[in-house]
Length: 254
Image (cartoon, rainbow, N blue to C red; front, side, top):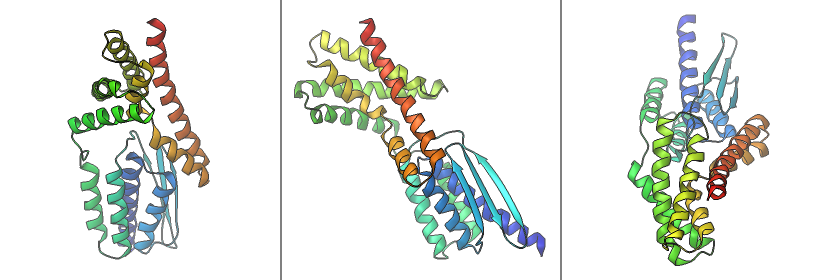
């Protein structure tokens, strides 16, 4: 009987940690990850649970009269996939309603974890290009600079995806991409295909700006998760510095 109970608790740990891993790797806030993990565990009858989440690790403990089990999961990669966060949140609500058994929930989470990005690479590049052009107009740029910014932003994001896949160094891809943006913007203005180089650069770098990371850092700090909030804030600051340094070096050399 104890073995069966132990196996049941171990499976609950697996479900909770996998749900937390998916959400954390997809860009969810720390407090949301902890809340989701606790809700799933309590839905399966485990009342005494403790979770501690940072941007790089998940620590989860199940504690009752029969067994105490603590596990840690290292998070090596983080990105942005709001669709996965929404799917896991929806699945946790269905678990709370008793719609899924442990095994069924785990299989569902495995499917979500293994699924690829919702949008294709070319659709991401197209979106980045259009967003770049729209930001030029939003920052009171000229319509003459709209098309050059679309080209610059789309090509730069294409380079960013390639560099980020080849070079596994944090912030290096943002730095090189920003340098490419500065160079292309200068060439376009120099040859008469653009008017305001500052507006073209601002619009083109916007897809690289860590807006979600900054928002999550502030929300974590407000929620009392000081370690996670400061860590995410530092990561956002370093990303911004990498982007600014890439632009500054090109402008300085030119």
